[in-house]
Length: 230
Image (cartoon, rainbow, N blue to C red; front, side, top):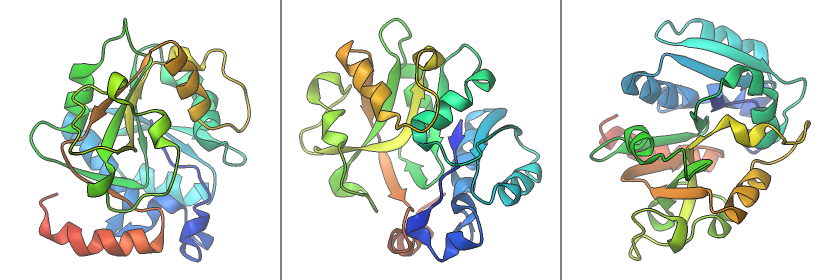
């Protein structure tokens, strides 16, 4: 599932006329970077939640023939947790990748999606989150990442790369949504519950990572993207 329903207020005035996932970064819509990675990995079906300027986004997705899309419509953005719960009927009963639409990642060595899938242990995990070295991140907000990424729940922790931030890519099992509230809420509520049960794990990313949530972040990414192989 690609999370794509937010207002994108930090990207105004661009998001006054288009949905945030369609804002261009280095010549293509930011969501396309994630979709390209999913195609390369072999994913065939993607759920996308839509709300703000949803008609534009649905039309764009309809033009992509390399993937089948299921659309989860939200009358208003329901935040990360609410968007996942609203889409629950579409998610099935197996673990799924979840990806934020405002991130771009470049793999060095085995891909992030492959490494996440290989690391997933259904008996021990409800969430497996990709973590990114904060010092090597391009574009990131101050947040509560340190509450979720700790030495004891991070597979392959490296002191030289710490502290880590949440990279906006991961695997979750839909069972965590069964008793989740309806309406707006952040997925961090579910992360906290999983941590209490030692069922939230993290995996450091190997490669470059960009967040494109502000115009400044996009400008930084565009200076660096042309010099790396996408």
